[in-house]
Amino acid sequence: MERRRIAREPAGTYRLRLPAEERAVLRSLPGQLRELLQGDDPSLVRLFPPAYADDPDADAEYGDLVRRELRADRLAALRVVEETAGLERLDERQLGSWLDALESLRLVLGTQLGVTEETYASEPDPADPAAAALALYGYLSFLQEETVEALSAGLP
Image (tube, rainbow, N blue to C red; front, side, top):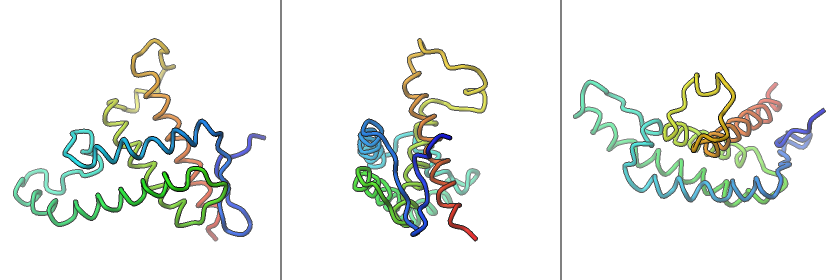
């Protein structure tokens, strides 16, 4: 039986079983997304979707009201991943931040890659210039699933 990368422990903490290489990747990704969050990169559209697609004025007003807080929440989650990627155990709040950060990273990378349901309908082509980024997207998806399953294990 394969050991999970993230597992709930009886004490209510969560054990991280991540190889050093994966921890290094997880430490590096938040900085890359943080840079994008400082501007209006088109790949952020899934993080900040329009609330009023048919009314640009209402959408701009809504964005002024909530975008700063949404950005701050995402930056806080990214910071938690950077600060805790080397730990063996996380508490529920920290793992919840991991879930938020993984989702943000996946949404932005998926937007950059143009990921659709058809993307994984066939075997990836190793010669594809996007192969490494697609593999990273797949890894982040896997880790997100492990995180959800670990957090769900504590539910009644």
